[in-house]
Picture 1 (cartoon, rainbow, N blue to C red):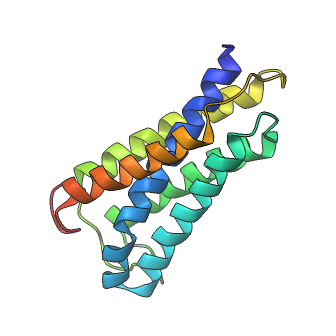
Picture 2 (spheres, rainbow, N blue to C red):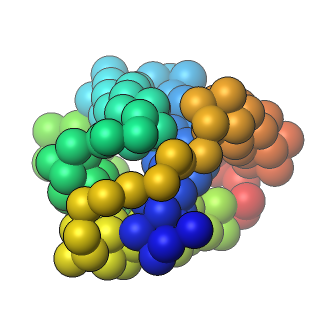
Amino acid sequence: MTSLGVDRDVVIVACAISAGIHAALTPEHFDEGVGAGGGFLVAAVVLGVLAVVLTRRRAPAVALLASALVFAGLIASYVLAITNGVPLLHPEVEPVETLAVVTKAIEAVGIVAAVRALRLPIPTPAPIPPALTALIGIFSALVTLAVAGGHGGSA
């Protein structure tokens, strides 16, 4: 498999993991407010759509760029959430949590892989199967539910 294939697969997996985690935490964030819950719901849906689009053999380069931008936005939003709060959506400052830091690390890896994939020639091998991508997202959501122990927990 070429580097482009590996890089795109890394982006797909990062999207699926992040989508699963955001989906699992959406109900808890709706308990905090519509803004926070809506933000998590939108993130989960957008990441899920990107993961599916990227599993197509001839996925458009714009999907890689969109993935990098979404990951960057999520990381920036988290930095705001733990330092100042996110105006209008979640104005209270969030505590730093291990699960969130791990999620942001996965998203950072996704950014690097997306940028690398964008710099390489377009002929691409078949990406990882959509069913495997869905399984990764579901597994991530289930693990998140198991370890999160409530949004205020240290997970």
